[in-house]
Length: 251
Length: 51
Length: 213
Image (cartoon, chains in turn cyan, red, orange):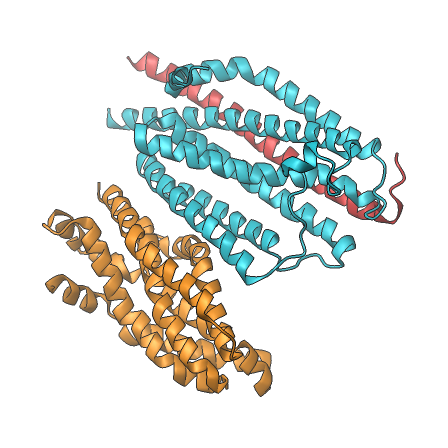
């Protein structure tokens, strides 16, 4: 694959045109995957012998948690692209993605709390994973607030992208600090372990749960992608409008 | 409707909350996208008339 | 270093952070009750949190005054690179806020009936940790310097960045108070402080240049 071709989409007009073409298909696909994954997970999976019906929450909890982290990573990449190559679309994509990431973090936290209540007997514990997600949520809040506070588009893009870089380092630091500070209740990441997928380890997640989970994850990824593209398009238009209005005021 | 046993409240509420949040996010995004598109079109038209 | 002296004078509010620290620590027993053993248990955490909040309170003064009277523009054109300027600013903030907090902490520890073994680690952890608070705070101040209602936003941005410092710092103080080995968190804390001092001035300077554009 030729990655250099990607730079063509740094042109706002090209991005909007392509987005208009891609969006309908992507939205339908996202809705399909999410629908299938969630319906399958909700109606057609057996109860876990220990966790009962609460295991069904996994189809929301795990994908949203994955997206919460991946969207932050995407923001990190687009921020870097903005700093290095100064493509407006890149900075606006980071801006567009932040609220989605925040909602994903919120979903992961809420479903986690609802799941934790019957399983651990508590809504909230100061467990490393829970705490790191709370901190991630705070980072999203600060990032969005900074975007909103600054009027000049370029200044805002510069400042938020530097904040994103610094924040990423500190988020990572916090992750390790929190681990050090308290050993947790939360189980390890059961799906991402390579052995859990192919091997016959005892921790391996049964296929009955894994297949709908992957469909659901795909649904969340596609949905986030569709929303990011849509919102980036909106931000591009909003920026162009501000520029036009400024020019009009000059005349 | 599957039998959710004693955890029905937990499972249903987490699905409800998550789907609600996602729906709100999507609705807000779509509404803002439509509004922005319309406003930009009017302004671009106005600019063209001025020139 | 005329710049440093200037910054110290402009930083002002020498006693303000200290007074805030004292008040926070005084309010805690009112909130949780006067039981000595309870106070002793939470003293290290309260002292760290109090120091952190006192630090936060004075952050917007680091750059705001210079921004208003335009001397920041002068500093930007001065031969000293921007990285140096923000480092000096952070140092000045530490000298006016961090150091007094460190020195006052044993007295306030007395108020909260901190166990005798805890004084050394507490002072040590604050001494090592507060420079990081100042440097991170300068970054936050640089981010929000041009904004009219920057104060609240500054707190929102800076507090998550304070998390690792707070965790390790309070851990040192807590382990010290419990007469446990505190070498590991202290080393981590020192690592974070050194890392922030080495790297963050570049970020702060970059941010400040953007804001002065």
